[in-house]
Image (cartoon, rainbow, N blue to C red):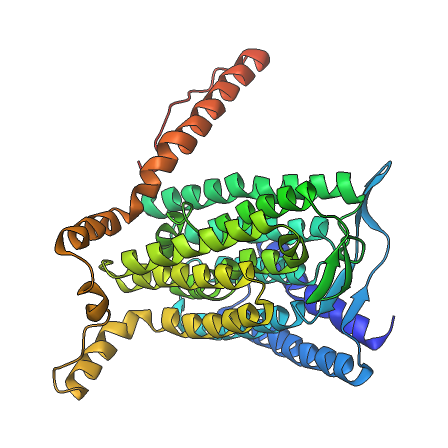
Length: 445
């Protein structure tokens, strides 16, 4: 295998192997000491950063726009197969670099933040699992393989939200996050199925012609619109766009380092990456592009309003992320692919820093206020002056209740899913002859 392909495979497999090593050791009763865990993480992500730089240099010197590695199928039944192909191009390379660098920085930060915490080992196991899933998403050569990494991000996200498992609220919040993910992930699953049916494959090289961002889709018309809208549904869930934004503040129940890497840097941008990868399909459908722009605009407005009335730093940062992601969706809908990539990179770096500094942000605000002579200007006051007082009060009430999104989803989605699950449980008990006690419990207790 040529050197660039070796580098690509090594970058993806490194955190996966670390997850397996720590996880199997944990199951066998062996838990390494904190310095060993942290030093191994530093080594892995340091080498991965060097490998990404070497991969970029190889692509630059060879004058190629993409590098692929792997062959064969992960799974095959008759005419259906999931090809085992990794690929890196001008879109996936920046995301891969961001992942290895920022996960490495979060691992270093967590050394002190979680020092002597009972879940120190568990945190790093899940961090490596997340890194492996994210790298698999960004380097997948097909939408089928992308789904595998997508699901690993979902699992690790829910488990890290419930990290402080001694308290009931993190567990409830994790269930909310998981249900929202699973509901919206149906868009990605069905979209990949439709793509298989229409195009015969989900390989990027089969579905698209040319190199990113100048690609043409192999299908147009109603098929492109349907697949684009289904992928938009999946992206809305991962990127916390309206009306699926309610899970984002609940995810702040997890440790600050996981909040930084998941909801400030990498995980929330996975939805935007999916839309950027499917950009040719969106460009071929005016309806799908318009839907992306509409969702982004509503989310940007919603996130901005709610962030102004939040009473804690992490929740305010969460809604600020939602508003920025809304702007990124608008850029993608208008076909400004490179602008969106640069926006994502800048937003990921800045938001990671803000989340990691969240515990001391109030102290810094007081220092800035004192440095300004006690006259730190209130942001957005000139916009508020343009809105009539009656509408302003109505908007504040709407923002305080966060757009009623949770109540709407509870009534029309969550309750129906819970009732369906209880009926399936009752049916299973009748078929198997078991009599387990069941009861209906709200997600919010």
